[in-house]
Amino acid sequence: MATAKTVHAMKTPCEDCPLRGLPHFREFSREELEFVSRFKKGELAVDAGATILVEGAHSAHLFTVLTGWGFRYKTLEDGRRQILNYVMPGDLIGLQGTVMGEMQHSIEALSPVSLCVFERDSLMTLYNRHASLAFDITWIAAREERILDEHLLSVGRRSALERAAYLIAYLYERARVLKLFNGRSFLPVTQQHIADTLGLSIVHTNKTLKKLAERGLIRWQERGCDVLDGEGLSTLAGWEGQDGNLRPFI
Image (cartoon, rainbow, N blue to C red; front, side, top):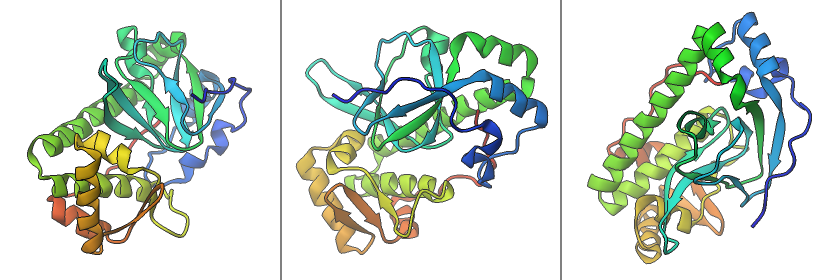
């Protein structure tokens, strides 16, 4: 299994963070930006397929995704895996281990990932001195709960076709607002990732994705899929999409 590389000195100054230029995120005040610059201890480069955090681990750090894709998952003793959600730039990871003492899920990199690294021991300073940033972390946690509510609804009540349409529409919408597409709307997920997220067999997943392709909604590739009609996927799933509110990040 690939492993994360050593934390190195800060390469991307917070003032020049590429995420700050995206209209998807709220602006930092000068005081907030100065604090986050001190809070950040470096960056971590992670190879595709590497485990970023392991279920049961006690990590001294929490992280913000700067670039790349990953996913959160849990496994049963026999190796069966349930993917819970996907992480993209701006997402905070490791907060659960910071608050609860240990991670209750694992996180793996889907693509090469770079992470901003923060020391867990400095988190109380954030809460004590920067109420707005503390609220941001609370907002991020509440948003994750909201997303998981929608995922659970999908797995529990949507048909297989609707589940697949929802998942791809969700990933497409998130990637679109983050401007992760470069000339084509390509999602770097395999059919096994889709199956492990939707709770379907790989055979059932393959048949379901073929139906979406036959409707002209996606074009499946060897290591992912091109989204041809994101709005059509949302309509098929009965999903209204994400709200357009500005979101925070640390």
